[in-house]
Image 1 (cartoon, rainbow, N blue to C red):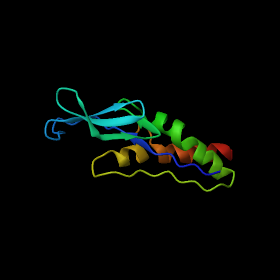
Image 2 (cartoon, one colour):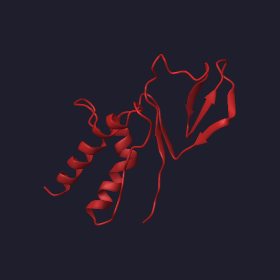
Image 3 (cartoon, rainbow, N blue to C red):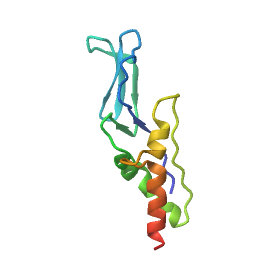
Length: 117
């Protein structure tokens, strides 16, 4: 079983976020750079397997992308889930989470121990 899935999670916008007045917009499985007045810049449009918007939770990311990897690992298959991105893009929050929204690592550990109870 081989499957590579590439997903993007858009973190909430910080007021200083700006690229010459342009902004990134996520729609379905595509993220595009748009001019201030809303016109997309065609050279800056990328498609992914999944895009999670600013309102997504760690639970939704885990359920869609990581849960099957954990279940397969418990059955003896190799699997990897990792976060990659620039500084302050939300990698640690997605992997570790918070008390109110645990990240992928605590959810994975909980699922593994639940399987062996």
